[in-house]
Image 1 (tube, rainbow, N blue to C red):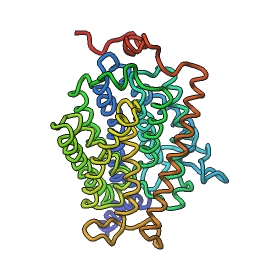
Image 2: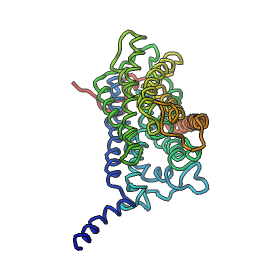
Image 3: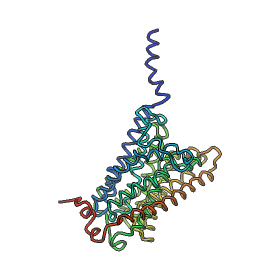
Image 4: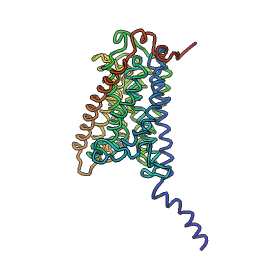
Length: 429
């Protein structure tokens, strides 16, 4: 009798956990959170840092680091609350301030099976990397102060509302938009903002006639490897649980990255005669960005198609934007992230179908949806995110420009931002 009573008592903690906190889910999202932060610092920082000229490497590292710090504080103060709390009558468009400064969130407060504090921290890492991605568009020519002011305003004016629309119970969520880990919220917003920033600031001195080759491809490939590993937390963590959804999201993420890399260098090899390290790394990012919105809804065979498509389409998008339109999106943020995010968001509406045989996914957002219905919602999400981001980004850049010059002057650009803005050198050999 005593043994049976003891056995029941020993089971009580696990029974309590079954109705609330899940330690397995929590352990995984703790790990995923660290992986996503790892994507920005050091991953994206090194990836971008190696792609600029040596006189500007520290400026890029500094921008990514400063954005990480500033966004973290804004997310604490009001970003998380506006993105994920109930906005009352305005909930379709924006959340409220119930959780400003993480008010009402203690160590025991839950969000599903997770500590709510962990949910807020995980989402913070997404908010960090999105404006950091935009750095690649205006690299080597934007002043540090205006860059930081724009990043903070952009977070509040673009990222937070779109995040609420898609993940916070807003109007796109109600329509049934599929965006598992950030096709619209992260990649389209960052890509479109990058395109607008490149147009507003104008090209770098000497563009397009002067060659501006990466100064340290070893650094870039190292950063690319960190991005690939960190992306498992980005997509796998977006399941918000340790289970089959997370495992499949990680599998399709890996397949798409590999396919994107090989597709990119195949196009490069065919067009220019040789495959490059820059090409294989950029193709990987294209594959990762494109699978992101679809990663929780499609299977591995579809991921192969998505990755191959990403490598080919994003490759030709870079050529079109930079060489045909002559827009100096310095590190190709729009043609890789923007185009990839659009492509992946649309693909999610196709390959989520359960009727494609080997290429089937896991069903549409609503039982009554056909493929045409889901694809229509996906297309609406793409258009709405694109237009809203473009307009607000342009307004914010012009607003910041009223108070301070956005770009450095000609002499400072020639000298390099490391010395001109920070009085430091990346290399002193």
